[in-house]
Length: 167
Image 1 (cartoon, rainbow, N blue to C red):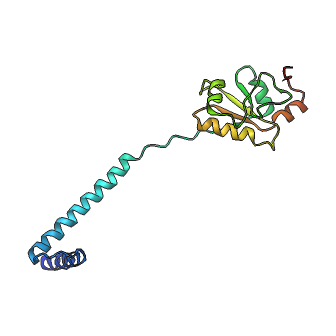
Image 2 (image 1 turned 180 degrees about the horizontal axis):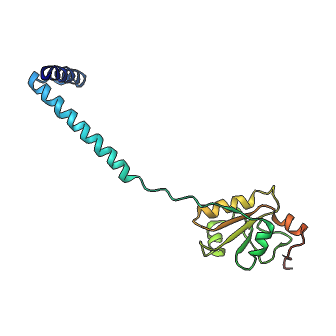
Image 3 (image 1 turned 60 degrees about the vertical axis):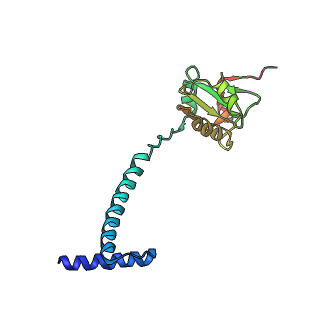
């Protein structure tokens, strides 16, 4: 059995030598193949271990919570309400305007607390501005983002409290 192993290793080492173009003696070939196999196995284990060590845990994505009109109304005094249209005729009572395409500095100056409850809305269900802004806020590290899809249209149709624009 040992002779078969030696022959197999010799054949492997001859193949390795032929591939690498090295000119080694027969005794060195067997020894080199054995060392190379051991080194390859050690390198393989090290590389696998290193890749596990180097993998940083990915942060859990922050979910954007959908809110109903009734939920938003109950949050008027406890949350920051943000109208993602940037401007308009009226807003949900107490809301601030912050356009979906506002620059990061403007966002950070208006929304200082990244852990505060923030409700983002826009014109209506078909308006993408609130979703765009909500996703940007999450990307910027805000952790408590809610989305009100009904927007100002649903809000005013149901005669909920609004702020009129200042003249």
